[in-house]
Amino acid sequence: MEFDREATVGTAFAAQAAKARPSAWWWLLPPVMYVLHRRWYRAMRQTMLAQLTRTQREQVTSFQSKATGWFTVAAGATLLAAGETWQIVADYGWPVWRFWSLVAVLMATAVLTPAVRMIGDAHTAESVPARSRPATPGRWFDPARLSGLSGAEDQKGTDDGRS
Image (cartoon, one colour):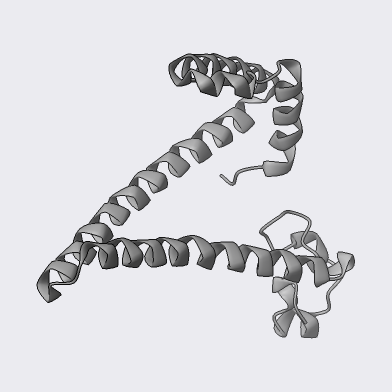
């Protein structure tokens, strides 16, 4: 079951508009802001989920569970990388500032690589003519397109949306 982003995004915006976020001034008292934000998020989530169909609710909760799991994996990998980097610095007897500079470079690389790739993917998607874009985001295979193809065109492998 794939996550139906288009169907849930509008519902999420409607739910957010229903109740305003807590003021940023509450960050002056972080524990209070934490409680207010948590209450706001819980109310917004309940409003959003109430507007979705059962299938959409399952998709949203499945996506959030997977995202949380991958975030946990990434956090663990970051700790492992920091430990290995510290070991390298200790083995070579380098000063502590070199450890922090290596960590900063590694973190910047880890963040910038997917960011640059996502920007490139967005530019590529914009450059594809609207006629050849997939009907469903992330899917290049459109079974409806196959009904008009002759056997020769079907043999060439045009089912992936590219000629």
